[in-house]
Length: 462
Image (tube, rainbow, N blue to C red; front, side, top):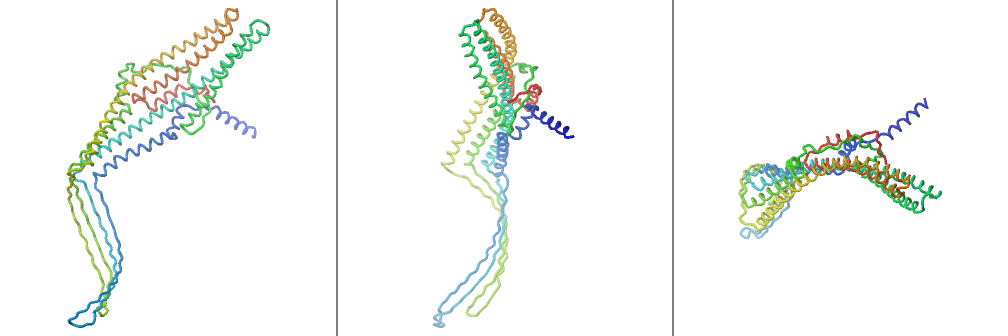
């Protein structure tokens, strides 16, 4: 029984260590844990409240008050009436009262153009916040894709660098052996040693870059990763659909979220300018008020004999008011109106600049995808050519028509061709994702489609 439990534990540890994460798992976790996305959600809620705040000036406002006042008063006075007596007349009094009062007031804008334009401006800002959040969601897909592909790129580079180093080391050993038996001059040994040293440095740099790439992936989710799934060898780079660049430009101008953010910002600035100009227009406000007051207490007086009385009063009332106001002249309001107008012009030009930049970016990304698709096919063929060149150089080296430098250069050319092929695949994937982002077509479905091209059997480790 003990052996069975031990075996089971070892099996679980092996399964856990051999488990490789996929890009879809990392993306799902990044949606919840990425601090940039958390900030984006908070900013979305901030933007939504902008419309509610601006709407409040158009809606009625209800307020109430309540007061309780307790007061005590002592008073004394003296007066001499000369036609009656020369003796002075004294009076004293004391009062203790408590007054309770409360009221309710209602205010409603009847005609307020600045408030109306402020509401339209706030509504545009809320829509802008929604568009910005959608852009942030697409940006998360781009960041996850870039981070994941950077790990795969760094891993492939590290593997080819290590293989290149091993191959050159074997050639260096063979060169030394041939030198020792007098078949090669010492210069061949020195040249092979120099090439090996350079390959060793490149291998160390590739190993460090791989560790950094894994660390960058950790930033998105807050979790450490040691094993990822690699890209399947069956991956195929295809041209974008539709192939026409103008179609992608049209998609971009209609769906790009940065354009939408700029458009809603332009609309907000336009309404802000209208609101500033409307500050010189008349306003009409209606209000209603109800109040109630009750006083209880007692009063004691000596005039000159002692007497007391109770104080009790109750009152209530209501009022309706219609207020009309209109500024006649204000230098500050005129200046604010001119300032808001210029801001509206600047926002409109920024919107135009974003549209032009997006159209140009769509064309550039479209061309880059087509170029990278062709590059993948060409660089795959380049590996075959490099292998043939290496075989020919190896044969020439063995018969003495090629030297060690030629052989090592052919070997390095082969490994470089393999690196170029791997890089072209990752460049193609990222370019396609970027094209869809510009066109506003990028969605989590693209992550899951890419995930289908990953092979868990290809283990990408630190």
